[in-house]
Length: 150
Image (tube, rainbow, N blue to C red):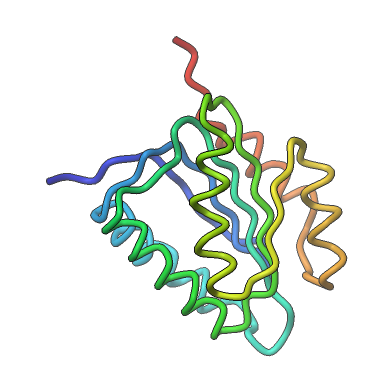
């Protein structure tokens, strides 16, 4: 089976950036993990670091992909991941997506919060002393929106 789901990732200083439209399968998560390796290694794991995710559509995972996702989140927590901010847009199942993601974040013991707007998400991340360039993050967000215009 091929990769299912669209996504792009990047980094701004101590903040990993992710934007994508699900659902995602095992192959997409495996490839996505490999494609973020360089950015993840460039993070200074001795200082606070975090992630921000911009999710679009039906951003869910089947059980095997969710297991892989949970393992990835736990490993990142062991590497010092402090907090994850998530914005979910253009979706009819926001509550279901939040529920699935919260299971993995809670299991790993990572601070996480869901937001409806960019400013609130980045402001929340700032309280964890995570360094990032706000203009870079905003540019990533605006340039990588997976809005379904059907």
